[in-house]
Image 1 (spheres, rainbow, N blue to C red):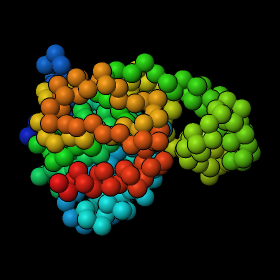
Image 2: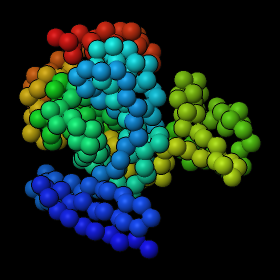
Image 3: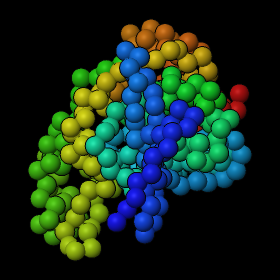
Length: 297
């Protein structure tokens, strides 16, 4: 039997569940665009850390995990303390029913506070992680030193992952014999090898047999419109770099730059030619040099 103890302090609720163990969960009290108070349950995110120096936090994209950025993180760790996170409903982080950018931003705030980053950090985000990073900067500008957004704009997108959702939802994970059978199944529905390899990183074997996804696929599908949604808030005045892949279908278009500069007036947009959406995987050296120059300037 557990006892649930509630307390309120400094703008946050805290629940302490006591019994065999105690679990702390923060409830952030934030305001929506209509100024209506909203209570957000923040989660303890899985992470890895490397190096020492000023903190850098890196956020992956939809269907991703922190391992997608491990190579870049280890290189940046020569000069910084780098944290790579699994966002909620991804990787080894907890699953929860909510998945929108105000919620993801509060998860990040909670993570930074529990890791003593009260003076802020450089924040890097790719795709969905880029939108989380933007929302975080718009909501908590005092916690962001410099912001790097990779291959995503702050606008609402129309989609582009329907084929992936359909393929993943069609997999009978309990009856797939091995990873090759899973990859063969995906190959019939998703023709791009790099996309299949990326998605296969989510597949893990269960102790009782069969497979499961690390990500919370039902919740991601339920909240897909929230993932596609725009971010909003008061302009972030800090230094911001948008990096786009020259071949990316998610490319930040010239017409997006007006919206970008209205929300991030101290921003620049740079292109890495020859890169698709996964800029960090396709052109890691070029991305790393661009980020190093920006953070070190």
